[in-house]
Length: 422
Ligand SMILES: Cc1ncc(COP(=O)(O)O)c(C=O)c1O
Image (cartoon, rainbow, N blue to C red; front, side, top):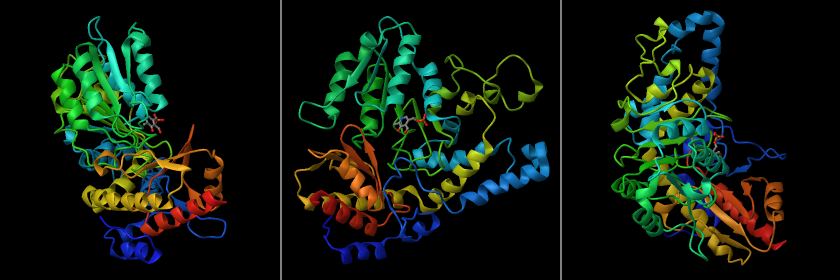
């Protein structure tokens, strides 16, 4: 796509944007001078939909009026409340309703999934992960390896970019799977790496892993609500994601979890059980024998955090209305515009490390800062940009389609340019 480097063009793109009305459905944080901040941090914490309060108030009101009876008599009865979210979430990740559940936090779900899908044996005990995976993922996989009595040195394979490159080539991932696949029990990769913004070819990796008998799971923290996903069709074994980033559920929001239909009825899979995963018909007979629900709901442990779910529901209704297709199509254009403008700066002090191929990235671009430290980030922050800094040298920016506009992107690049020069 041919872009132009001027303000009038940014405003023209905004005027033509089919999602332009959605910005007004979110609270945009303000600068001291009352102007909107340039919020490019939806990959860290998504903004609050204006409707969220109403969704939460509904549950507070029902609790006020009904007490415990709200489990059955609330407008949205709490007992099956999570089911309201399942269908909308399943659309976002390309799954069937029996494969998706909203529960817990991301890292908790990752551990629950590894209990079921990481079954090391002396011959097949390794986990394959990206070298610069998010720390929580690294802690989780390392602690699982050690929990099973293996050593991280022998059992963890970390994918790293080739010397002089910033991202990992798919061919290198496939080569490792080809050469070491028989000893790999689990491939667990971030679908989109939090640091570089690289999106991995999940379909191809899953196919290659399965050919070698490995289980394949993804951490979709930075992919859910950002990339087009087809977890069911790609035959992914499991996936986990948080909802407070692109899915705007609010700080510490409740997380998502996917288990492929092929596994949900497999009663031989080991799992950590809790009463909310027990057969719904007999849950309240309070029997001591666990009978799992024969869907991903069988992995639930505790009764649902309704207020967090109400908050997520507000955002998922917006996603449902806008549709992932339009969201993704604007994302490509918005991030493409950002990349175009950044390249026009032509400064040796910054380098985009995110792939320029749009299928290998989502909304985020990671800008490596060269020979100038965090001070550049601090300067743009003072001028009204909310982005984030990731040690040692990266500014992450993610214009998100539901509430960012082309004008935000234009203003951001102008501020960055100015800050690089003085
Ligand atoms: C890629 C990735 N994995 C895991 C986590 C940890 O998530 P949680 O604290 O919700 O468990 C994060 C949080 O930002 C993340 O970005």
